[in-house]
Length: 430
Image (cartoon, rainbow, N blue to C red; front, side, top):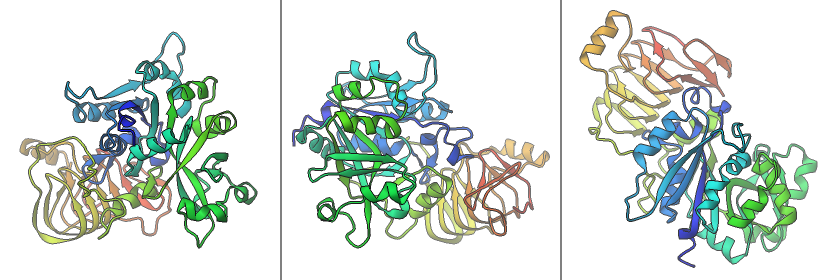
């Protein structure tokens, strides 16, 4: 492989829109800034994939609730002066040529095209900021280069039941994309897109059931091809740019065979977190050959004062007192008091520890300490950062509607979410 390919690639990472399907986790932050896996943020995944692939030049396009995302990136990703690398933030802004917010993924890139092409990189890798996967982009770049492609789209084989929310593409014998439908709904739309028998083995798809190739939202553009593809007013890559590019440019598919998950809903977020507690998780944070980077914190080792932990991911700086946890992801600085029983719970932890003085002041006002109080029973829930759960509280979706909004909690996809900074009074039953 040409060793210079990754050095000649610029990554553009989409900083996320309003993230309505991840609400209330996106009430105070953008999707890529949502904590994941105990100590990470979702944006750490694409940035780490770039670093592990030798791509050290990145733009992150931000717009919605971007303060925490900006802070995280600024504190985490600093390249030394000798590497010439950067992770640079490009926030939505008013300019002489336009005063509107980003109208879609393609529009976001177009509004920053002058900065992107100014860097004079031959290849532009466009990535989502809210997906979970591990990919060596050098292989993607190599195929793009060798095929003489204008655009290469990373694609994953999926069964029929997973096609409705994805862009589905059809390829010919040389992996050239000849058709693309964004989020097909009917069998009439899907049938022509099914991977044909003569291509199934070559593409490595499941031979036992009908399979389709879905776009992963990961694109490699040749620089001039990107400028040409955006020389219009199209707003979105999936709905507009790609179908048009197929007609006028050489658009190829890169068949990816690893794990990939789009963290687009509360259910997918919850299940992807709990998947980390499996004995052999599909996504492995322990892969030393391609680590996932995040903000380095000077926190003490976690302390467990008795109890039972089964299939639990435990982050730094936690104190767990004589409690039972099963299939839980426990975030930074989490405090879990004695007698608690947590099952299938994502605890995001805290940004700080309560001081003794603040605990006394809060108790005088009937406000419980930060963390989870004594004797709480919690199941199938997400506890967002800095939440205060009073003693004896019970939190469970059992017997409740799958969608519900209340003053201090929400239910989405049958999962209870306690929002950031929420206060749950002692003895509360949810």
